[in-house]
Image 1 (tube, helix red, strand yellow):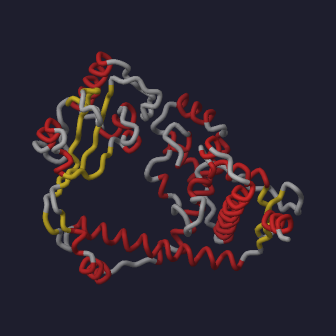
Image 2 (tube, one colour):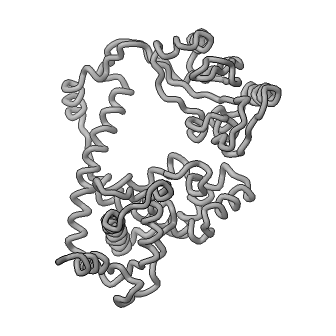
Image 3 (cartoon, one colour):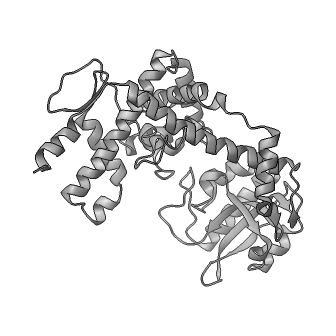
Length: 372
C-alpha cells in the first residue's frame, strides 16, 4: 500500500474491507490495483491490435493498463535496480493475469446486477473525503496524478467486487459453536497470556525536524519550544472531550501509528518496563483514560526527543482465556471465516476463469519471441 500521503490512502479501515486482499496467492494484491484507479474500462469491444494485450469475453485490456499496473507493482525497486528483460516479462505476465481475473469477476458481477450505483459511489467518496478539507483532497488528487473521475471509477469497481464476494462467498460461510470449541481445544495454548498485555494508543510530538510527520495535517514541530506548545494544545483538546483517534490521525508525529488513530496494538508488560515513566503512568489508568503529557525518549539513545500522551484501550491480565470469553469467541470466528473465505475465493476464481473466454496476446507474443 502506498503511504498516507497518497490520495487513495484517504480510505479508512472500512474502505480497506471493500474487497479481499486477493483471491489467491498471486503477485499483485487485487486491492492495490483497484484502489489505485489504474483500470479504465474500455467503452466497447476492440479487436486485437498493438495496444491490446488481452481480451476477456471480447473486452479489451489495454497495453496502457498493463504498463501502469506493472509500474505500481515494481514500485521503488525500479529506482534501485532495473529488472532483466526476463524478470520484467515474468512480472508483467503475473500482473496481466491479475488484470484478467479482475475483469472476469467484474463482468460476473454485472451479469448479476451487482454493479455499484452512483449513490453508493458518492457515499463512499464522501466518507473518503471526510478527514480532509476540499483543498487537501485536491492536493492529494494532484499528487497522485489522478482525477476525481479516476477515483470514482476505482471506487465503483471495488464496491462492485465487494458486493459480488458478499453474495457469492461471504454469505455462504457459517461458523458454528462446535467449530469454535474444536479450534479452541486444538489451540488452547494460544489463549494463555504469559503476562499482562496493554492495548494502547499514542499521540507523539517530536522536537526533531522531519519531512514526513505521517499525520493528515502535515503538522510538524521543529524544536522543543514548538513541540511543548503543540502537545499542550492537543492535551487541552483531549481534556475538552475531543476524540483521541481523530487528533492522533491529524496531529501525531508518529508515522507508524498516526494513520490508525494512534493505535499501538497490544504491548507486553515487560516491554512497558523499558520506560519506567510510561509504565508507571499507564498502569494507573482505567480503560478509556489517558496519561498526562510524558517525555518521549529516543529509542536508541534514550534521550528526550519530544512528548507523548498515551491512552489505555484495554488491559488483559495474564492467564488462560476461557472459550466463552467474548474476545476469544470473536478471534476464533474471525480466524475460521478468513480461512474459509480464502479457500472459497480461490475456488471461485478458478471456476469463473474456466467459464470465461480469455485471449492473452502478451503471453502468446512472449512465447513466440522466446521459444526456440
